[in-house]
Amino acid sequence: MQLSIEHGELREHACDLLILNLFKGVMKPGGATGAVDEALDGLISKLIKQERFEGNLGETLCFHTYGYLPAKKVCVLGLGEQKSFKKDTLRKVGGYVVKIAKEQKVTSVSTVLHGAGIARMDATVAAQALGEGMLLASYEFREHFGKGTNSKKHRRVDAVTIVEMDGKTVKAAHAGLEKASLLSEATALTRDLVNTSPRQMKPDDLAQSAKALAKRGNPIACKILDAQAMERMGMGAALAVAEGSVHPPKLIHLSYTPKKKAKKKIAVVGKGVTFDSGGLSLKPADAMTQMKIDMGGAATVLGLFRALEELELPIEVHGIVIAVENMPSGGAYRPGDVVRAMNGMTIEILNTDAEGRVTLADALSYTVKKVKPDEIVDLATLTGAVIIALGDDYAGLMSNNRTLAKSLVTAAKEAGELVWELPLAPQYDEAMKSKVADMNNTGGRSAGSIKAGLFLQRFVDKTPWAHLDIAGPVFCEKETRPDIPYGGTGMGVRTLVQYLEHAVS
Image (tube, rainbow, N blue to C red; front, side, top):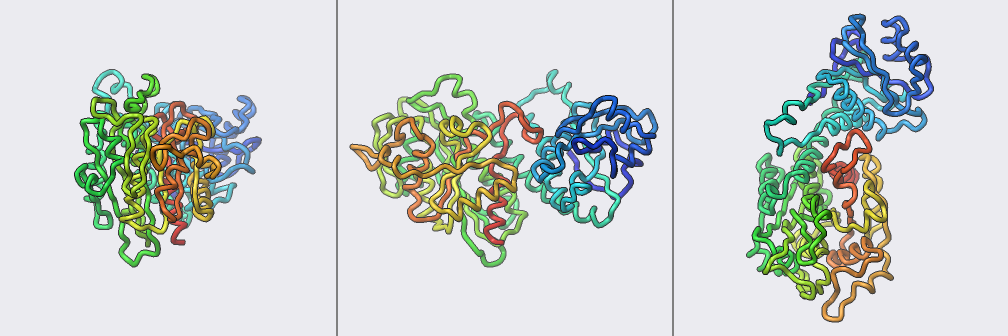
C-alpha cells in the first residue's frame, strides 16, 4: 500500500473514499469535517442526528456523495473520548482507515492527519503513529495461496493520501511517515517469518533469511555456525534439542556496527525453535498446529536488524539465535537425559517440551562469553503458563536489573505493545534443583513462567538482562484491534527500537 501526504484542500481531493473524523459527543463538526459538512450543505450534521452517530472509537457513518464532491464516498470515523485520545489510539485509527476502505471495497483513500487538529498532537508523532496503524493494518501474508477462487476474490487498498493545508505540518508529518514505513517494514518481516509454513522455515531457512539482511548494507554482518562448530564450543544443550530432527541446527550471529564509536553494546537473543512437536514429550495434536510460531523471538531479532540498517544508531547491537527443530525420533533426546551447556552447567531433562530454555541456555552462554555485552534482552515464546497468567495480549517481563526493566516497560508503552513485569522470585529457585545435575529443566507446573525466567538467569552471569516471554502476543488468532490482523504480530520489534533509541539518548 502506498502511503503519502500532500498539501491541499481535502474537500477538493478526488478519491474513491474520503475519511473524516469526529470525537465522541460532538454534534456540530469542526475542522476538516466541518468544512466538508459545509460543502455538503450540512448533510453530515443531519446524518449524525438521524443515524444517532455517537463517535465511539471505530464507529462509522458512510454515504455516497453523488457528485457533490470529487470524492465518491465519505465516511466519518469515530475517535472516541477526546480526553482518552493518545498515541496508541491513533495507531488504531490508522488501522480503522484501512479496515473501512476494505469494507467499502475501494482502492484509493484520502484522509486527514488525525490527531494533529483538535487533539493538538505533534505532527511528526501523529503521522508516525497513524502511518504505523495504516501500514500494519494493510499487511497480508498470501505466500501460500495459489491462483484459485480465493485469489480472484482478494481485494486490497492501493493508496492512502493524507491531505493537509498547512505546509509546515506537511513537512513535519513526512518525517513521521518515513519512520512509520521503516518500522512497519521491519515488523512485516517478522510477521512473514512467523507466518511461513515450517516446511519452508527450517533452521537453515532462518539462517538464510539472516544472511540476506547482511547483504543489504555494510553496517550489518552475519556469521552462521553449523553443528560441528557448535559442538566444538561445547553447546551440548542446544545440540541435544536438535538431535531428533533431520534438519541440523544453526547458530546465527548478526551484528550492527555504527559508523562512529559505539556508546554501548547491547545483545538481543531470540528463541529459534522453527517447529516444536514437543519431542518425545509429544504435544497433543491440537496444540501442535501453530508451533511454527516457536521461532517468534528469533523472527523479532531479524525484524529489529531490518530496522537497524536505516536507523543509524550510535550503538553496537548483536543478535543471537540458535535455530533448531524439536522433533521425536530414534535419535531424539530423552526425559532423564543430562546435558551440558556451553558455560559448563548440567541440566537434567524432565520434559523434552521445555526445549526453549535448554536451547537458550547455550545462546545466552555464547552471548556472555563471545559478545560480552553491556545488556542482554532475550525474547522467547517460552511458556504456556504466561498465557494463563497474562492472557494473549501481554508479554511477561522478568529482569535482574531495575533500570533495564523500567526502560523496556517505557519502550513498550510508547510502541503500543503490552508488557507486564513478573518477579524473579528467589523462593521458586529451589524447584529447579536436581539430584543428578546442576538443575532440572521444568521446576514443576506452578509459577511456570517465573521458573523459566529463573532458569535462564543462571546463564547470564552478572550481565544486566531482561527476558520477554512473548508466547501470548506473538500470534493473533482473533483480531481485537485493526492494526493486528490474523497471524504473526511482529511483537517486540518496535519495542526494541524504542529501547535502543532510549539507550543512547
